[in-house]
Amino acid sequence: MSLFAYTLVAFILVAAVATALFRDVLSVIIVFGAYSLGMAILYTFLLAPDVAMTEAAIGAGVTTLLLLLTIARTTRPSTDRLTERIHVPAVVVVGAFVLVLCTAVLPEMYAVGGTETPVWSNPEVTQHYITETYNQTGVENAVTSVLAAYRGFDTFGEAVVVFAAGVSTLLVLKREVFA
Amino acid sequence: MSGSIDDTYTESQVIMTTVKIIAPFTLTYGLFMTFHGGDAPGGGFQGGTIVGVTVLMLAFAFGIEPTRQWLRNSFLAGLVTGGVVIFGAIGLAMVAIGGDFLEFTMLKEVFHIKPKWGLEAVEIAGISLIVSGTIISLFFTMAAGFSPDRPSGTGGVSGVDATDTPDSPNAEVSDDD
Image (tube, rainbow over all chains, first blue to last red; front, side, top):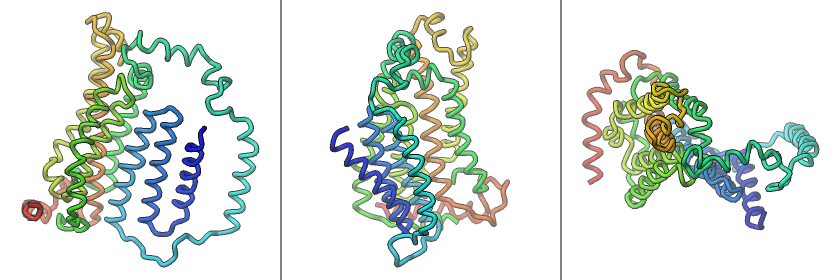
């Protein structure tokens, strides 16, 4: 992890905290978009360009637009204060809980990119997809081959879930046309 | 009703010019990502999203109501349901030629072509259609909003809406020029 990556992580943390703390809804949506963009760049750093593209398109793009549309269609309470009022006992309890979890869990986690991680130390499974993808499916992108060929049935279910999301929005809004 | 759909729209030269310049590029990028999902990062989900976002950008720049008139409801419903049907049909076609559901290796054994083409067909004709159609429809549905007084079962079009819609988009388009 380079200095740039650490700066990026710091930026993402600041954006996440700002998303939770800002009182104005429009500001929240804007910093949330910045958070998603930071996550997208971080995924590129972690060598996951497919996930990065999804995060940039869905997280930073579509979600921001839909949330903006929602506050345009509803009321946006005006406020003088910049941040939400912080409830100190709740922060202390949740903070202590997260701290305990971190001290218990983080030392057990593998280093990023280490060769002892389960992904690498289980070569029968991982290496199979990396070495056999082109022979078996004819595509060079292993992510796509797992998505559409090896786990095609899962993806069919996912696609139907996306379809169901569209239909259920119509149901919730009591409409029968996309208008 | 249709007047209230666009009450948040303000015409901005900056946004319209920016969208006019970037929209062809995002559309091309989205299609590129969809069609090259096999050999480059990306695929139907990402490409379909970017194609859908291009329409969302146009709607933000030129008003939601004219964009909605341009993309008919039947077209959007066809995109979403057609994608699901095509995905399922491709899967069942593999059953028809003697394999399991979505077993693309059958393409190699029966037609002597790469399994890649079955995979690309699912990505391009299935996933990307569903995703782009759903994103555009979610946007339009949320833009229309909730009207509790409208009874369900009227096709989403009340009497007021049906008489109003032909007038307002024309007014919107003439403003634009």
